[in-house]
Image 1 (tube, rainbow, N blue to C red):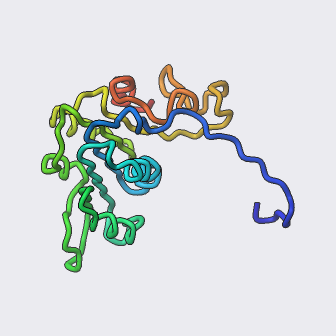
Image 2: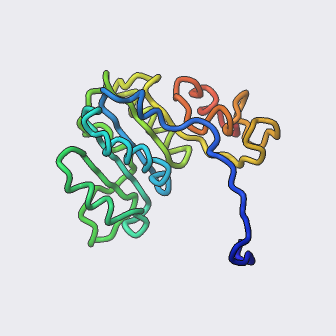
Length: 194
């Protein structure tokens, strides 16, 4: 692309797969949990939720990253924290004396977050190990498994389930995902090396 000249044509395919089920989550509390750069794929769901705020109960955004310097969308997070219709908590794994927020992994924020587990949907994106422990922490809060969604990222080539590059057990991330209901992939997701 860097060698392209003005007026040349570039092709784009997609979008492929399944999106965040924001419309299905309407009428419920929504907990959005991002780890590291996993906050980026969650933003469209958050934007939809905020644009349709009256259709949701409590909305909580929990975000964790390695250090304060690694925080994505810092100014946007600060603006979101100022809203009265959204709870935003940010934590970092490691911090110096100039950090005044939470320190620890993002799962530590789940027990103190304010939402009704019985009527909550949760959207999770981040490193696989973070998503695994986040799903477990949500289960401890008694969020129904069928209301927990996470996104799986794999190297996709064909995007129609033929090449197998994105295969995850019997599923293909390109056509069956990338957003999956946790109860649908729990056994696959918790198996190492898949």
